[in-house]
Image 1 (cartoon, rainbow, N blue to C red):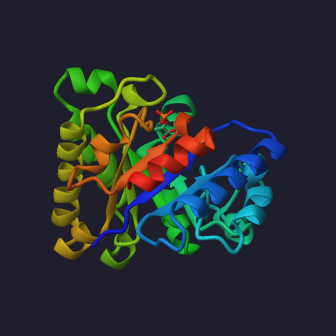
Image 2 (image 1 turned 120 degrees about the vertical axis):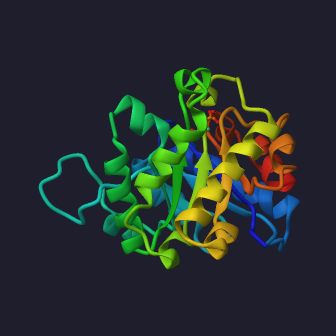
Length: 254
Ligand code: PEP
């Protein structure tokens, strides 16, 4: 059985005090709504600047700390970058790798994503690998092959034991922050495409173990549609994770 994951990506939002207050709101909301429940796993991914402050709030709670990106080297002359070594030092358990904003705003290639994924696993972090097609690929009927290519390259160097540790987020780019979302049925189909490729590249055990999340304009009003899908094991939530009550309500549904 795959344990569902509800992960919040706070992107480049929130000052330290606001991040701390939001984290507290989530922790307290979960304590009230799901006392002692270990059915759903919850992770918060604040910006790098707030990792330490939010980490202090999450310490001793079941809510995991995650980062939004990492660089593949451990240290060196890489101005502005943050390494897996540093994220572990801050108490991170998760790290998002290959988010579409990294790929399409900052030009991150599939090869760069591969190196980042390797670094995350090397440091014992749990990567949330994001894949997803743009509207151009979807309209051209190439959504499946686009996502398969992203995944194939990202995991090319991994052994089955490493691949098992992945969480994959299927996030169609056209649905991120737009208010438009894939239907539950289509999210389930795409998650199935991803799972089949994992079986082909690794084995049935890896395909069965890896969690596949849906992401793209998920909010309390539509999360149930995704969580009801057999291939979908939770959600990666951007905008709607910036409000504690709504985010907790989504975790409760998972
Ligand atoms: C995301 O940032 O991964 C995301 C899915 O954003 P949103 O929920 O705002 O579409």
